Every structure is written in C-alpha cells, then in structure tokens.
Amino acid sequence: MPFITHVATQASADRLEKLIAERLLPGADKAAIDRRIWRLFGETWAVLYTDLAGFSRNVAEFGIVHFLQTIYESHRLLVPIIERGNGILLKTEGDSLIVMFRHVNDALRCALAMQATTHEYNTTRPDAEKVLLCAGIGYGEMLRIGDTDVFGAEVNAACKLGEDIAKSGEILMTGAALASARLPDGTAAEPIDDVPPGASSAVRLKY
Image (cartoon, rainbow, N blue to C red; front, side, top):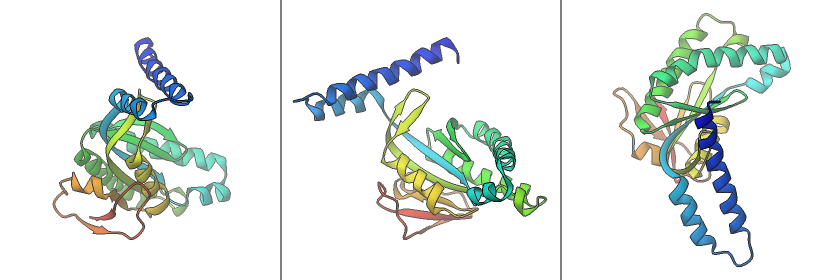
C-alpha cells in the first residue's frame, strides 16, 4: 500500500476508534459525539453489493479449487466494468463485491452491464461454471472510513438485497436508490414485498 494511502486510511480508523472510546465513557455526550462522527465521515454514496447465486452449494459439491476458479472468473469479468463505470471497488468478501459510486445512475448502469456480461459468458459454459450474479443497490448518507470500510442503513440494505433476497440475474434497489435514479430506457421498477431493515421500500429492476 502506498505510504500516503496507508497514512490516510489508518488516520481515519484511528480517529473513529478514539471517538467511539470517548462515547463509551460514563457521562459522555453521545449525541454530540455522533454529530462529530457524521461531520468527519458522513458522505453520500451509492453502494452496489454483488453476490453469486448458489455459491455455497457449488463449493460443497465441487470443492475449494472450483470456489477459487469461480471467484477468479467473476473478478476478471466484473472489475473492468467497475473501472469503466466510475466505481470504486471498496472490498471483496468471498464471492461478494462492495462497490461505491458517487451517483446512483452509475451504480445502476454498472449493475446492468455486469448482468449482461455474465449472461453472455454463461451461454458457453456448463452449469457448474456459470457466474450467476445477484445485485443490490442502496443510496444515501453513510460513514466511509478511508478506503477500507463503509457503514450505514443503505449499506446494510444493499447487502441484504444482493446477498439474501436477489435471485440470479436480478438487480434490486432500495426505495432511496430508486428515488435518486433515472431509469434507463427499456427498464422499469416493480415493488417487492421483502424489504430489508433500514430501507422504507425496495424494488426489482425489470430489464
């Protein structure tokens, strides 16, 4: 990690840790400390959380090497799309990607491009090697700690949508993300009943 990046990232984490420690002290003015934390780290972002459908089942059936191959292929396919689409790949967690965007429309276009790319890839692959992508999008104010972590209700909701609720090929969005998005021509949004905690509503993108 470049020195300047390391200092900036570590400085953010250290500052947050000190404020949390201060918040834990007896008699601490928690509301005032919370305001300081939000002033320091609060930013408005769109977050795209992706996951691979059926991944755990495939690992159990085909083994760890297959697991690594599928992750490798998903990164090879998806990371260039993120880079072209004005996204920042914040972190990877197993078969999941957490991607940040300044504008929700960029997150939406990136998710659509990812689904199109994996669909084309899958047409020539056996079922065991297909990259079956699920995606969830949230948008709003969140706490971004350097280039290592991000926290917030919309982050949690996007994670829940992408990891637990979305099926293969689906793009789900929180109501806040939809309210700030301009849907591309030929797409529409339909409400879903399974609304994750932290979101007032959620929709499935029809494309």
